[in-house]
Amino acid sequence: AAHTDSGKQALAALLLKEGEDKLASYRNSASSNAPAYPDLRTAYLRAEQAHDLLPSNEGASKLKENIRSELIKVADKARSELQSYKQALDGHAAGYVHLANARQLTEQALEVDASFDQGLTLQSAVAAESKRVDTALRNGESMMASQRYDEAVAAVADFRFFADEEPRISAIIDAAYK
Image (cartoon, rainbow, N blue to C red; front, top):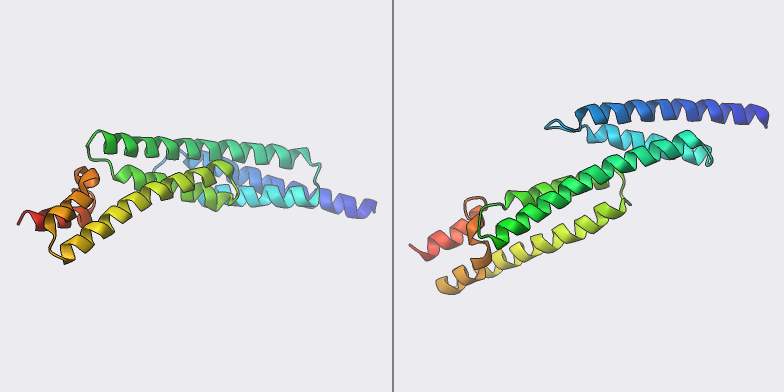
């Protein structure tokens, strides 16, 4: 049994070393335009593997905590993007891109850890906002097809300030005013 334990310890040490290296690599890239999310994912997997091997391993627990703190930063950015989107919507300004940014950040976080609680909450919020836009667009396009231009414009009215960012909105508005 001692032999098995030392083998597990050695393997866990290797897994944690790779996990810590990948976490460091991610952290070095985190403020760039292309954060190395695959490295954060690898770090997460190695922490999980080390934890499965040795459930009481302190290094695995610490690595998992550090990864979670990075995921929380990603979630905070996603929340901020979602807030910017809502402010643009309420303020009748361009800002549709913020919804896409929030979606992308949320997806990145969930690709690292599919059960990340804040990521799942954000995923629902982003999906709800996306559905509002998609429903308005479908209604608007359906009205356009029936040549009911005023109703088409009314269907997308809440999102008209995103027309320069979303071609489907501008298509409805442009067609109605031809």
